[in-house]
Image (cartoon, rainbow, N blue to C red; front, side, top):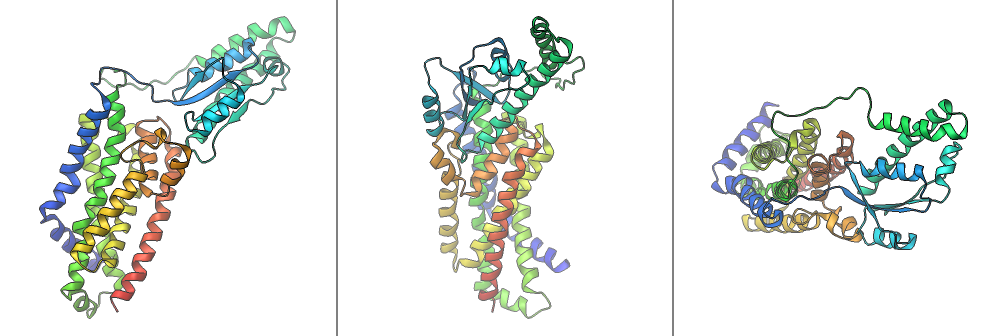
Length: 395
């Protein structure tokens, strides 16, 4: 382990001496984050709704179907988009075009079926390739569960037909306003979300990830220089193994990128009000996974590049391609389903999903598990490929 840490410390010392390191890892992401926040966030005086748009068609129009609609309308995750002139085919097309995250169709007779304890199924239209559809389905399931729980209570309390609806409304109101509530507030005044804050919630992780990749230029050059100066060959004549050398370089890159993430997230939290600390353990997990993935990519570039010039090319091309496809510049939610699917071939898209699920979409800890798993898969792939190549170039 001492040999690994010695190589790590040597790399970090060499990297931090280069002024380009601070430019790519700190100065540029801060400047670009501020630029994109101001450019796309407007003046900050207006308000916007960041919830996922969900089409809604009520073919029942009963009191119970209206209650179901009210439950969904109060959601902090989805926003109902209702238009009486739309048909089921219209909703299906809007979802396919990516203009709606999903759509719901409440069938005729739904209210009577709930009252009879045999509820008809609400039609759920979604694009399986759109990851936000899972979030919408969870929110709809939760609302339907509350509705049915209220119906069960009403069936017990009001056994005859005339007593059912009063009991149902009372039970539903109790679900919406429980006698015991836990409220977490800060000492600061609560402000209405504005365009600047919502834009910063996208541009902050986007620029952070993009320039983390750009910062690999200096880190990968260290590995190239080590081979060109024959330092690697001399190092291999000692008791230091190839695995220790590889892990030492990797740990240096990881430490550098993770440190960058911590500093930039602290800046965004304090000055741009991007709420990375809403679920700190989830944010930390995504940051660790993203840093591990980008570091493995840097290791791969370092062992493949044969010169400093190649290192620059091998870093900048993936930076632009992966950042552009992965939604670092423009949210993938604003694109079609096809582009969203293609975009998730980039690890940047998964890292963006993880960060934004916490800071912008208001989701829970479980929402980062899939992005973290995807990033872990990319990390393993890059590292194995780098180890294979390193074995060949060091022979």
